[in-house]
Image (cartoon, rainbow, N blue to C red):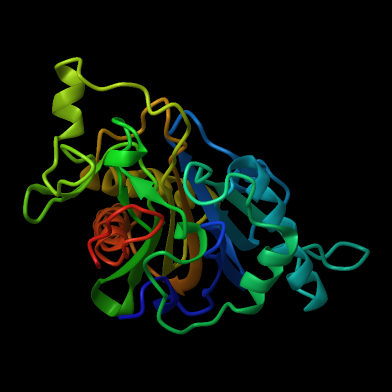
Amino acid sequence: MKGLTDIPGILVGHVSDYEGLTGCTAILCESGAVGGVDVRGSASGTEEFELFSPLHLTERIHGVTLAGGSAFGLESVSGVRRYLEHKGVGFHLTGPPVPLVTGAILYDLGIGKSNAHPTREMGESAAAAASNKAVQEGAVGAGTGATIGKLFGMDRAMKSGIGSFTVALGDGVLVAALAAVNAVGDVIDASKAKIVAGARVSKDSREFVDTAEQMKRGAARSPGSPNTTLVVVATNARLTKPMANKLAQLSSAGVARAISPVWTMYDGDVVIALSAGEKQADVNVLGVAAAEAVARSIVRAVEMAPTLGGLPGLKG
């Protein structure tokens, strides 16, 4: 399976700045996709999220941009929009088509160069690189500067990145997820019921402290900056906008399954759901599959992350 690009009509492209350790990811749905969203974190940074409202005039969006750089990274959304404009993709009224592109950012200014952030040009390049090939995972795109396990400071954190996974249901229905994982907490592999990456006992250790347990004992301190895990779920099943929002909500169960602690005041966790097909499926079934795809994507994000920026990664 290829990950998010298993869904027909969904394209993914990355651009990375390995000197500044930041980047952005463009997810294109040029024929349009019905979208929904679930924001659980308390430190989110977003653009054009009103497009997901059932009360909004438009029914479909044409792209999603995920970026590092904190709020500065939202500049990259305009690059994706400009790329689609040049292709004639967008919402049609009386004038030229207007591409409807949403965006969400994560905070990666604590690694690499703090003045480096995704630009409009990087967003346009990520969109130009988008394809239906297997999703590139690890320290790429929005996951270039992603880290996890930071409640005890960056020196005891680990490298993370982007992961993607697909769950196949009956009758050709697919549910796929892509996650850029940049959490305060630890990453848990639910199938093994253990922490696989997170805050370490010391800078030179690979033993995990279990952030949630340490918080209960009063040993943890504030990470001092926002973090955020960004997720996009897509399916080839047909959904209305209210049901796409419900799918995003159900998908968030996968975030809680794979990250602990989750949805803290220092996380801006967001799940976006996209419906880009005509298959028939119950939204509850899709939600079960989506939660699994999200949890597996989060684990893959750390499994595929290399050692980078002075922080160890599971890939070495």
